[in-house]
Image (cartoon, rainbow, N blue to C red):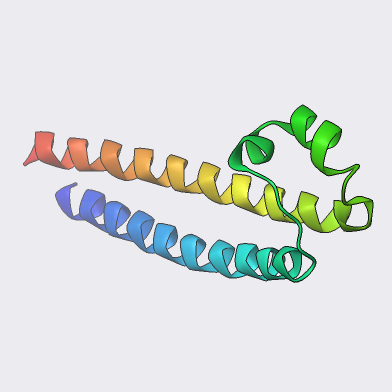
Length: 99
């Protein structure tokens, strides 16, 4: 049981590293395109879709799809990291209990 839990924790950690690198590459590609076109918005816009639609999309209508891709990848990366950190913490706590 202990070996299985250690294997699960290590595989989750490896998955977190892989997903982090994968989404960082995708986010950085989208970010590079936005920077080249001088698109500017804050973190509050990333997490508030209504605010993004009201303030940013009208200013940059030609970049709407690229902005949406960037925001979607960024939010998905944050969600996946949160889930994986919670799982690693949970399995780590189980490991401490069984040890």
